[in-house]
Length: 306
Length: 306
Image (cartoon, rainbow over all chains, first blue to last red; front, top):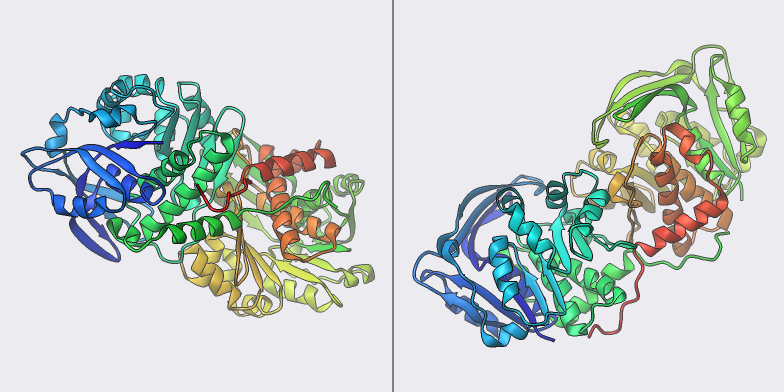
């Protein structure tokens, strides 16, 4: 089943206590694809400026990423510069330059219009809606957003919520969107405003999948070294959607398994700077870590307890 | 198998955004026992002053709590007064009065000296050691501690660590004890200093069980209303140890199941003020919630993924 992501294709400059990078490949669509493509081919829709190192994208195409939906236009690429606190628990955005994204009007290639699994990465909800309009009959549409759009594009975002199957956000975004600090009430608020399911990512504390009736929880991998949290949420989304597209399923058990693959990809993302955490990861590595993840929580209950 | 707890039997005054209580039954041994006794009879060792409402303890005896090891001496009972922040994420100790605990010298009743499952609640590590000296052949000894003892009784605490099977602390205590902010490295540090296993409680983010080879994770219950976090950690310990004593086992799978029962008891503790969360809980309720907990994380992985 075809898998499509729309999102930013950016150049990131990141400062952490462990080092820094300048103008490295980043953006939601890039993290999503390098993670997702480990499970299923990914089509990307986005835009880059004339300064983008497209040869690096082309090199990634061999992993199963189709960049033909990424427009190349004259102007400056999207750039993000951020700095993390010493414990990596918080970060400060030093600079955001939208560049060619400021005037981006997504036009999906014909092949992408029949995508069945669609992830609307964190961009202006107006653009997310414009993408959705062009897709014929998706089986599952998931979207991300962030505080900037919650504050500045609430009406468009609420319209979008009514048209997606799943919202995938982090805990702070869920709180801000719903106006409720309790994460479970926040999830219920979101479910009451459109999506049938919500995934709330909690960084080092794992992630939750909720529908109206059940909650599924996946922890974060017990890592002793974390270098760069950038992109972990998008890598999670890539693993989650990549698993579902590969399974060709939106069933409850597959959604739970997709959470484990999402968390697996998130754990690779944080182990190195930028997308480097994925450079040497094989499909066999993914399976091994997904099983290690699974072991973190599994036990049979006796019936009844002694 | 007999289950013994030594810890504080206190009077708590608690302020939360949702209300307050004054001089309510509290203390680590009390929370431990009301939770643990839902799974297995509990013997308590501790001390109360002449001002303690012992009739309330006697009333709880019907639940399977043996208070005969609690000395009644003249003087003031241990009192704690605390205030929580509006989101219940942090608390401030307004007052601690040790009272009769300041001069407490634990003397175990003969029956308690043959206890097989022993929990050394959060008191001076010198007292925890003094209790341990009096126990003949325990099968599993677990202990708790807190920042106050880490700062003021480090040598005694380190001696204690060398003599217990399991340390059960919260994340902040694990970090302070080890001097390492990464929780997984902190756990490894603890394992290198004595205990074969460590449980790290993370409040609303669940709890981890680690030995040298494996990690098990249990989330917190997805509660939409939390009223009072006081005693949740001790209730967790009561559920954990109560399950093991009932199972008569220290096997890996039973330890994992014990984590689920611990988390179950923690969730009851936070739903009401003080120990009231346990007032109407039946054994059948416990089983039902433990199963709901179990469902939060369980899924079979296909082999291999599609």
